[in-house]
Image (spheres, helix red, strand yellow):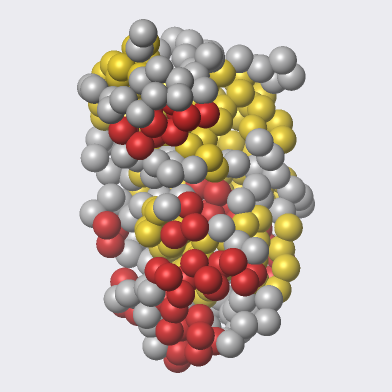
Length: 313
C-alpha cells in the first residue's frame, strides 16, 4: 500500500516566491527507500530535494536527490529545509548540527536567514586549454580573465571555477553540455561555476552561473555550494587585495588588505530566477547564507518500494 508524505517547494536565496532556487523539502523522510526518494525528487522537479531524517550523531540528517541521482551536498536545499523547519516551528533559532554524506555541518538559524558552515575548502589549480574551456562554455576565449587561474574548488562539492571579464559575455554563454560534462569528468568536478566581478547590483560582489550536467542539471539558478567554493577560491588566490591590484580592482576588503567580511553573490537573473547568496571566509571556515520562502505546500502519494507506480499529487 502506498503512503503519503508532506512535501514542499521552497525558494532559497530569495525573499519572495518564484525567485531564487527552488528546492523540494520532505521534512519527515524516515523510512523512505532510495528509490522512493528519487521518485519524489523526480515528481517535484526541483534541481534537488532535501529529505530530512533522524540522526544518531547530529540534530538531523539530510539526504539530497536530484531528479536522477543522489547528491552528496546541496547548499540551497540545506538553506530551504532549515528555513522550512523554522517557519513551521519544528526547530528554533540558534546553532544546529546536520549529518550529510560529506560529514557533519554546522547550521545557524536566525530570524533573518539560515547560515551553513561548509567543509574546509580544497582548491587545486588545473592545467586546461583556455580555448577548450571557452568553446565548451560558448564564450569568446578573450572573455576569460587571464589573471584568474582555472581551478577546481570544493567546500563539499567540487566546481571548476572560471573567471569571465564582462557580464555581457557571461549572459551570452551558450554551453555545449556534452562537452561540459566531459570537461568536468576530466578535472573531477561536479559542475562549472563561471563568474564575473561585473555585477547588476551595486552592492553585489560577484555574478555567477552554475552549469551541472553531471548532476542532471544543465543550469542551476542560485547555488550555495558553488558560491562557497568560489568564495574559498577567491580567498585562496588573493583576489581581494585592495588598492586596485589585479585581478580584482577593488577596495571592499577589510582595511584594503584582506578578504571582504562578507561577499554577496548574485545569480539566476538569466533564468528569470534572481537570487542572492551571502558568503564569508575565515581561514578554513566557509559559510554561506540566505533567506528562503515556501512557494508550494502539498501531499504526495509515494509508490511502494520497488514499484514503478507513477506519483500522484
